[in-house]
Length: 80
Length: 459
Picture 1 (spheres, rainbow over the protein chains, first blue to last red):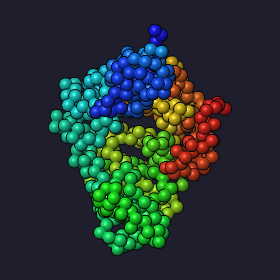
Picture 2 (picture 1 turned 180 degrees about the vertical axis):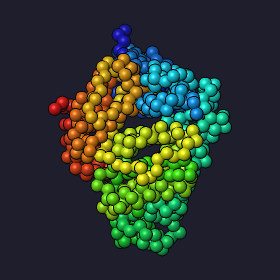
Picture 3 (picture 1 turned 45 degrees about the horizontal axis):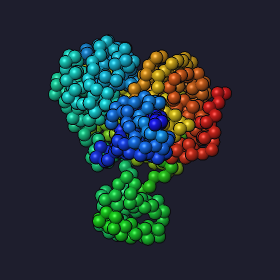
Picture 4 (picture 1 turned 120 degrees about the vertical axis):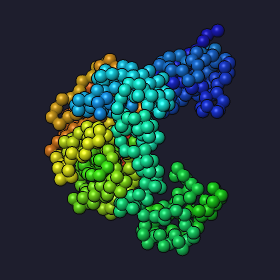
């Protein structure tokens, strides 16, 4: 099955939850619609949403919560 | 004082290292794991890693900073700005560990850091504060009495509100009578507390601030700065002196800042911030910042005083070497904050790698920066990369030099706000000194700004 990639638009720290006490934007294996927020990137003391540019099934995250990411790095894959 | 520990990063750490070296001090630069290759580390005599990249685990960790400073046998600690610079407990911890804190005492920092205490202290020193009810009002009769002092327009605020919630504006007596009753009912419904207070609404206000220096016994001012060009309450562009401020008001403003410094026995460099109502020719106390400020260079450019070196001398126990009559203003200075942001994408921060850097060298031009060719800006801290400062015999010449310097400043590989400043330096209202604290955000929403920031033309 073809995989589609979701990349970070900017460098920073990747978070899977909107706040530490809230649930993840997307659980492992969840389906994703184009435009859905899959996480946040914190850069220079501000937070930016990471939107999915594609729709797909069964999301797999390649980056752990609170890990550093670079611009263009693949954060997650979905089955397209 | 022989060994100075610098508990900060970025451009201000570079500034402090250079000032300290000028006084013959040995410099010990603190850095997080993400900052091992920063410019201040390269320039300092020694460097110490104080923790992991997140500021909470390094630059904001009092135990880590004080422990590292002691282990490095430092005898003084400069906190810079931000991070722990206005944390009274940090100042106390540095002093308790047997080192000098480059700034006022922990007690002074705490007193001026508390809004209510600071306002009372300012009033006691005779500094004008925004007229209003000191606390909640018993009823509408008490409110009417306050109006004699405030005039119109006034803000009616819910005691239990905050962050702009529960604020109503009344522009005349009839509107006030109507709105006050509504506001009380709304506050009761929204917050379960109908308590209200009233404060004068200062419209079209400018932000002006006065630089002060004190050694605990002697207190002087180094005139004022104008910092009205702000975005999201962050200063973007600063000038000194405040163009168009009448001489008698300038005198009253600066005298009031010195009176406040004397009131608290201030020790170090500080800034008293004010709202300035240009149409009413009145100024009101906002707050005191008990540290060096980002925009201190514009004051240095017009007075010739090295504020960071003065701070270090005071911390070493020296008396203030400058008398008030020695402080004079020469010409005009403007500072532009160069941030790692993309103005054309709603100022999204974007840390990159500097592939090429070319800094303008013209007359009256100064560039305080953390950048060097090949440097990769870390994503963990604020977006300030540096400050371009120009000085000229008058404001028009300073603006002319600023336009030339901005056009000559080349930073490749790292998005910056240079294009914003290049546009502002050519904007009619900015050139005519016609702006207040609301100007920049409304201008940014205009078509003029949008075309100026997207075309990026280089004239």
